[in-house]
Length: 76
Image 1 (cartoon, rainbow, N blue to C red):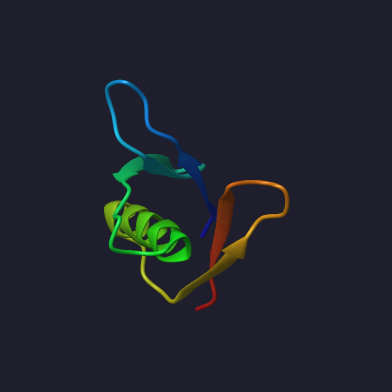
Image 2: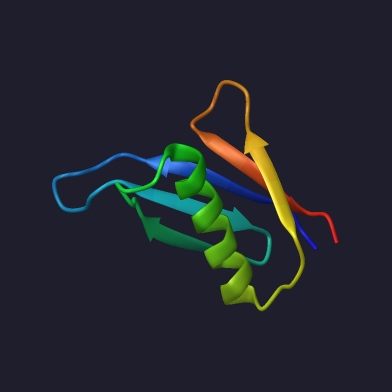
């Protein structure tokens, strides 16, 4: 397994806010869900990438210092 990092991408003239989830195996962009808080948006993006890659397990994460991102790791 690989760690997954997520990063907030602000809106542009053409797209709304997004979260980018990435690891060595791939990346995924997920639209910001305004019904969720920041942590839930980042976790949702990471879990969407986990699903896309066909990985299993329980994932936990937390905020990264001095960034608008999070890191997630599989604990089993």
